[in-house]
Image (cartoon, rainbow, N blue to C red; front, side, top):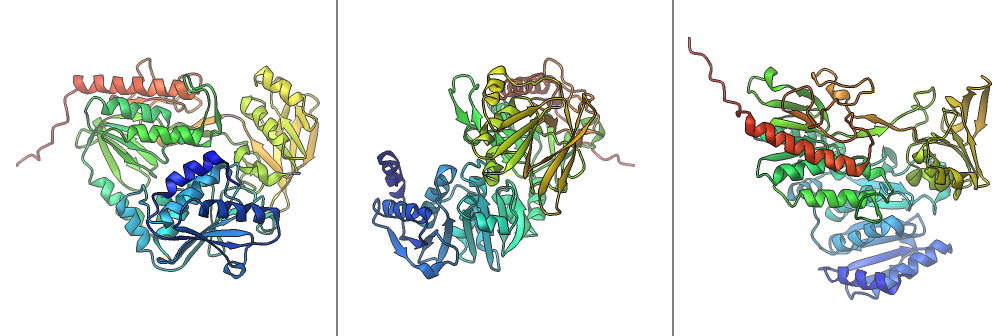
Length: 531
């Protein structure tokens, strides 16, 4: 099952095992079961602490391989073949079940260990989904820590009947004790905040106690990471507060225009960014969303305040806003109702769930045409709808799409409504802007690829000037309209939303912030007047 190179690498990793690990197989007569058995046999041959046990009664779902620590009675399940993006999840499950330390804070481990009750997590994934491994690995770590927590990865491609029965149309989809828990990317900290209701309050209280920063970066994408590194290298107190490190890069599959790196993937680049930032003395605060920014002139202590949605307040002499952008929605009837029920925004993640079905792609730019080309190899037919009378995509992509027999491109098409049967999408309506005729296309999925919206909603009452499109207005130095507040990346008016440009803008904003600090006196604590 594994080639010699993979075996050699895995054998090296397995040398870190400290305790026995059992691979418990519950198999049927499917081709997937045969491959799963071969995979387990290959793994067991690489280390004496790994053994294979076949037990059909160990699970009602087949085929499945459970990674078990018989001493701690922990179990991590892989229903389907954990290859592709999920092979790393399997390797980590082996290591963590075998006693290898996890790269998470001791406080988080203790919080997971102290959770009371029974938690049976099931996460439905596709092997081409770059977001799914993060969710799988978070749940697997919880299961490796606490024997009352069970985690099972389920490959939707191998369990299509179950996917259809549960009406799953987006991955990752997480179920807890048989009920829908969440859909989409979610981190370990976010999972804990949902199952441990006191966690968020404790975290907010801890953030409130932090000393003021010299530079506080809001956002953890390429611009934010670059800004943090440049600030930390100046030897000043630097913090990063972000909803998730990596930002929109985490949702990008192929990156082939990052200079000096021939090709890479978004999650891989995001991990490298975070690792680089952690090389410096930077206080990283993940899973936090900014709610407001208060100018220094309006605060009693003279610091700029960043108010978080959790209720915490962070203080800093300067702030760099790098909150990036998110996918633009169609804003038509039915879109919200059928989000994750046929309306999707990530063709790499959710495309496999529509295998053999008809789908539409909204948008004729590079993202839209690339999505159509990718989907064409999976689905029955792809209809591309573009509002303008010309396509904005590169001609080489347009030529490729036109060469595919199951791709139809319709221009001057205004999407007007998403139609469904109450549980899933069944069709889409659009207006022909030339003939003014309304048309309806029967389909099962709609992939929206119509550009980005800046994440600047939290700034509307802050005094930070925004463009008509909601972008933060900045000058050549990355300065905003508020003294001490800078901005960088896709959230700003800087043209061309590219990773490499965002990184340059982040470093520039950081240098500008440092220049501001050395020319501006630090706030002086105000002394109460004595009558």
